[in-house]
Image (cartoon, rainbow, N blue to C red; front, side, top):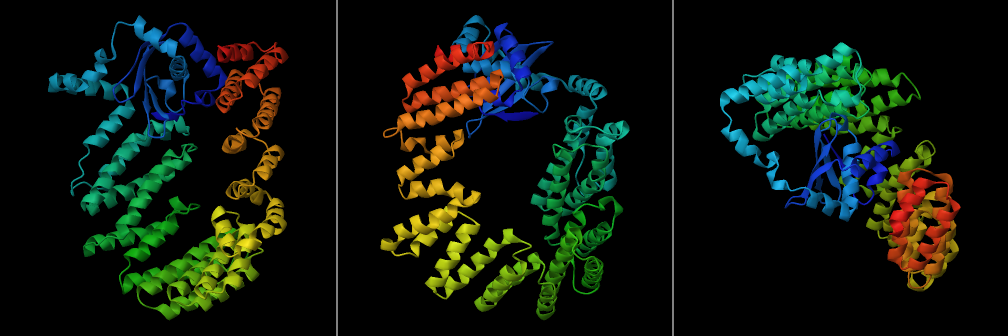
Length: 569
């Protein structure tokens, strides 16, 4: 399994106890054969209970994709990787290890994998597979998955058997946690990859069978697998997304009928009770339904769900189910050109926010801006109190209508209201465009800034406005009033020439407060990096004085003194 680490701040990914163990490995010389390949990947061996292979592959983002053969490093950074990261941080350490080892990277057996594989006979490989399968159930399941045929003759029984075999250890235990469960699931992902390939190549029947079987078998697995890492959920969602895509394809009558009937049956299947998957099956059913009996069956089912959900008032779950059912029935009606019935249905349930949004979108698509205006204004008035987070969306519809009608005064008022509800630079710049240049400055200072300052979301935009308007004094006061490392680093570049001392004072306050409230080597290293960053700003002398002062203040913290001594070197 792999995970990602930012080489600029590796310590934040390791608990302090892991960092200490990694440091012990590093200082004892346990790292062997540390070298870098032509593509930039670092590779090393670490001597522990066994010899473990570590690879650190750089990504486009500059992070390392880390792998370790230690079984305990399956899903989180472990001590062997922390040891190698320490070696990478210390360039002299890297050179020392390289010079001490005569064995080169190119002599690693991993580099000759294809050569070894090609010269191994069939009997040798077969015996190796038997041994591995006997000792490692996960390897056996992955092998069976890879070798499972996926021609048209393959069917659900075979896929079901494979998935049940993969999940059997977890089912026997009664409950397993994500780290352990993750090792059981590769066969399922192998199947889904094959289904993806088959779908792309047009072999829909087997792709449908695989996806349906994964859903049928993996949803019940939530009962005996703690899925906090979402591995089971990802497999189910992958299969559901595949089925959505497949439901939009063209089929022979027999395949279409089987797929449609499976969707109808699955909607009320007890194994999905309490989940949102029935909603997915309804969407698929509407996509698949043909005119006639299938459309009638789908309509009857949706009418039943609408009636049941309508009986429960002011219940979030029932309203959600009602809204989804109404929207899907409207979609079914429009599919068969029953536009008036669809419009009447949506109008009946227009107090549901999702239904209202669909009505607005439909009116806009039909070229009916006045209907859009009426629906959006009514939504703000009648639904705004219960759904304040949706007000900006309705305001945007009103802006679109007024822009179409070229009513600039109304657009200005709506943009201002939108900016206060949903502060973004995009809305800010649009609002500025509606104002005469000679009036904008006074409006900004007397109206806009005070209003944005009165709420948290507005405050987050103020700094960007100050930069945009080149209001440097106001930006500096903002940084003094709301200091944090992230905000300072985002804007300090504007003051390195004019107010470096004041910026340094802000950093010093943050560093002192941080060390007053936090201990631990990882946190000390983080503050060393902040001091190093101050060097890049040009505050070298001040940073050294601050370091000395902190060492005097915390002379009883040996770990801090060690880290600061490394930094001073």
